[in-house]
View 1 (cartoon, helix red, strand yellow):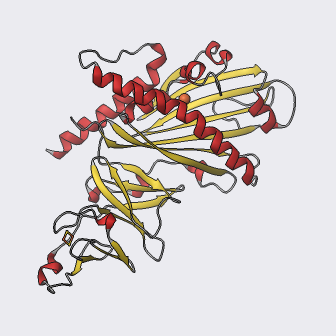
View 2 (cartoon, rainbow, N blue to C red; view 1 turned 90 degrees about the vertical axis):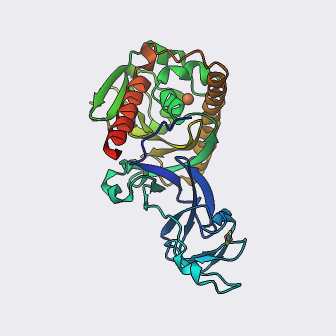
View 3 (cartoon, protein in one colour; view 1 turned 90 degrees about the horizontal axis):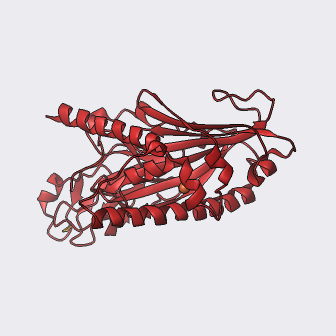
Length: 345
Ligand code: FES
Ligand SMILES: [Fe+2]
């Protein structure tokens, strides 16, 4: 199966809370990787295969910041360099080395660069500013999904699915009645739904803590190669909120980073950043549970869709108007894959 992602990009490898002193094994863009923290809290990302007989190093034993393979005891430092092979004091150990990957911790995530390490510029990390801005609070979770990561992007760039997939949770018929606009800016794609002067749904009414009509928005933003953040919120009608500027009320960003594991499986890092009640830890925990339940409704659909795609190889996906955001995002991804292939030859 062909690779369906561009490699010279930053991908989320894990949440800050997932990576600790003990190794975490995770296959990222087809590469088995082991992640752990040094004593100084910096993160190590190393190929998860011993250079001797390829036992996963994530099964190994930490010795300070080093890792000792559990099979024959080869000791590697956190740069992936062999230090010793204890039983025979084999000098070959010093020539052993394992690939390591550039990794940067930012906006609560560890970002990894699987491609050409020379090109790993931290300035290219997607700007998830609401996840680390002190005026906001952010939390979320992780699901592994048995689907092509692009199906997840399609889903997140398509707001119409809420009515049916989330009928029992966040779906509301009114959402279907508001037109959406799909636009592009460089390699980013936006799907905007602006709902002026409406009655706020219960969640946003509670967040705003005042009665009266509101302007409500949902703005999906695709950030290459595989993130979607959705700007959501309400402002009192007449307060002057516009598509460009809408900080008059309460606002959140639904954060979604999808990282390919294989062509048909992916890692889904999800969460919500918000600028209201930011010190209410109970609210944060309750919302995370609720959001996790809503996103489980999506992952069930996506996994069934992937399985159906594999059972029907003679058919292909069709795009209707509602798919314009995902379609444009896929065009960007295709272009990035082709551009990289051209640059690599
Ligand atoms: S497989 Fe790791 S030391 Fe032999
Ligand atoms: Fe959904």
